[in-house]
Image 1 (cartoon, rainbow, N blue to C red):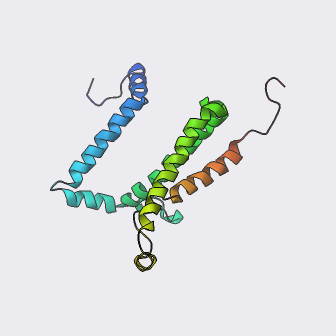
Image 2: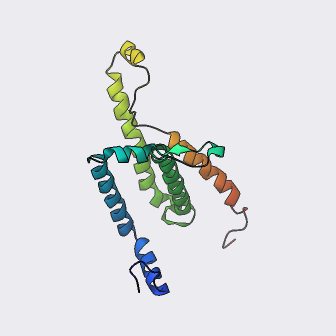
Image 3: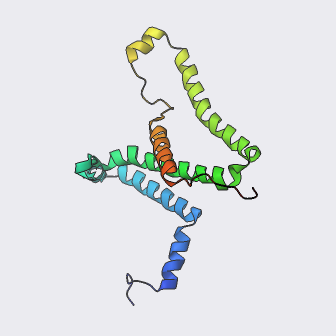
Length: 172
């Protein structure tokens, strides 16, 4: 048996089960982050920049974007889309279907959006209006709803497509 040969079915299933755990996924993500930081700050930074500037994606759909554009725009959209699907599942069939149990996570979510926006607004309030107008749009705003709006729109479209029609509920 060679090192890179295809393993038996039980071995493949065991590896797949290990990779599905959240701990392993988090460790892989942490390892990839450390590797990328080391590579970007190494003498091989030009190779890193060439890779980031390389384009991938279907040109006929105008999605032939650089890898850095995919990382900055595509991955957050996918993240929010998947998070929206998981949130819907929790509201429909999970722990959050009971409003009393959903109150604390909902308040935390609202606070997680409102507090950074209020901190940003408080910081901007201290500036004079003409200085703000002269600066134009402020880069680095902590509130950026574009990706969340895209994910919400996709979530709404999928919900319409895959929702079951209303019918009798259990016990009625």
